Length: 242
Image 1: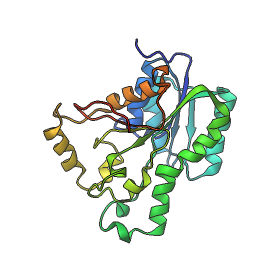
Image 2 (image 1 turned 120 degrees about the horizontal axis):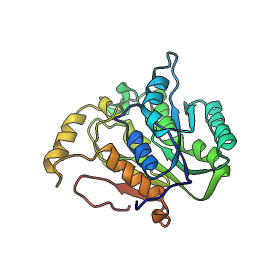
Image 3 (image 1 turned 45 degrees about the vertical axis):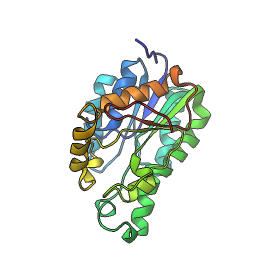
Image 4 (image 1 turned 90 degrees about the vertical axis):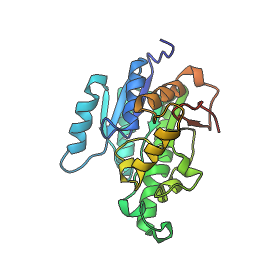
């Protein structure tokens, strides 16, 4: 096995279902031998908890914690559990993004202050408090991985506020248009996916597992000299830095 993450501990946020990029990352980290902690978005009916628990059970996460990043107390509680259970953390995976449907359609200039603030808080700002609480627990050579998209640099139809929200911090993976629960809210996403399938050298989009492999590389000692980069993972194109 080229990537050996045995003995490493990774906290993965943002798994919603088996279409999540976070799920692909979690699978590849597990395959490389990493011990996993998983967070889920709590809701009144417990739907997300049950779905994520069943999905991740084969990965045997040793931490399974509720996390709504709009609740500072929950962020603090998650890392209190990390400190109690693990003592330290080697990899933090930030796969969080949210914008209401009304923020992903129409004229961007008509966005409400509430919608703008929520999208930025969940999709971009949340990385800061997660790192703040993780920092005292980071091991030597720890790695932080987040997600980005070309829409953070160029105008993409219907991406609207998410382009503003996806700031690049630490190492970010840009996977191009891909079928996820989050992307399904973007108008015209299927057209974008079909366009990639027609024009990419491999005639397809990338998979969650391929994005996960890139994340496992970034989490490994093989990437110890890479920081502050956007890693583009597009079907048929090279992985390249910013």
